[in-house]
Image 1 (cartoon, rainbow over the protein chains, first blue to last red):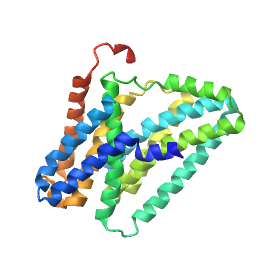
Image 2 (tube, one colour; image 1 turned 90 degrees about the horizontal axis):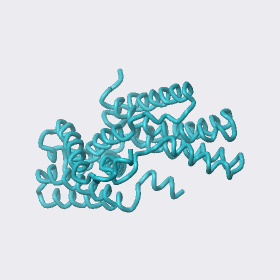
Image 3 (cartoon, helix red, strand yellow; image 1 turned 135 degrees about the horizontal axis):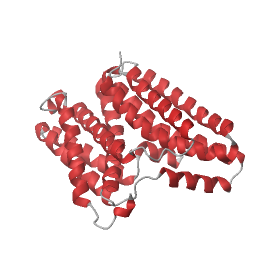
Image 4 (tube, chains in turn purple, green; image 1 turned 90 degrees about the vertical axis):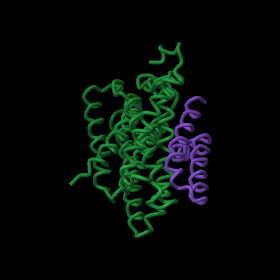
Length: 55
Length: 241
């Protein structure tokens, strides 16, 4: 079962990266900065991928 | 008419996963025979086909597209970031490249200790778990313009190609450039995930160039990923290949 869940959701690190990206999207849209989100999101995703790759 | 922008990524993603599944089935077949190993693989594929049919039925119930985009986008991000990070780590030499021959040897060693049922379950679980990633992509890409047929056709074509190639050489398919495919698909899937999640939360206006932003995002992740490979490259890890 744990292998099934890990395949579906990834490990804790992956979930943390996506949670941070999602939180940033919500915060930027809520603060009327949706236009900045289009640039912030890719940067955050790449930073997250770099962190995951280095672990 | 097939939508190639959907069928293409679906084919590439599925090909990588089917190669891994085939390696496991091949190893199991040497222990319990082709018939039993193929039976386990077919059982797993039937489960995956049922899951795809159920998912397309549920997603086609007329739910608000925004929520579908958000849910599927989150899954695509989870999946894409993982693939992108793995491809970057392998490209930079931080992690060994995936070795089908090694996986084959490991599976055989594991099988040597088990019985018939355990071997059957290894083949079933292997195909189910590798196929689960294919299923995620088929469902997610199928949502794009309701292109279920194109998405499923891409994955099915990949399955046929891998099985045909594998049946001909009857050996682990070690020459598939898995990391390059993983890198390209990781960038595409992450682009879809970012696009859909932000569009679902912020509305269509959130992306300055509309649907064209998808291309920009894919390029950004691909080029950014390559830059990260160069940045993180380990000087003494050439042997990883």
